[in-house]
Length: 127
Image (cartoon, rainbow, N blue to C red):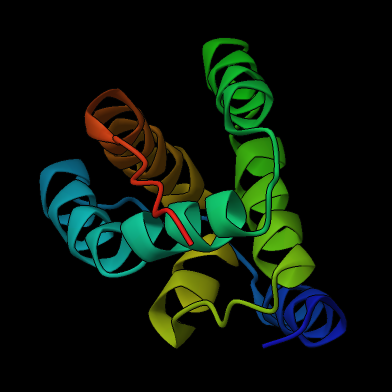
């Protein structure tokens, strides 16, 4: 899904959304962990292999999360994915379009991202 399609989808969902509903945060976080676990590692790898500055990206994601800018964190992930033509899962898009799920999705993203960033060891091959 390209950035334009993502934006159109989010706006369509918000247009049809009348009330914010209560969610089971534990179940929502578990679902978000599954969704994020399915793509964060490979997105990170795609960004790295395209020579993007991973420390700067990680610092920015942490800053967004620490300032509780959960929507900004989600949108930055969308921008990053678009930058390397990485397709985001439909469930990510669906969850990110609903305000009540955004904070838990943001928490799952940063948790997976930081875990992978701490463990990531690039392998350089001699040619």
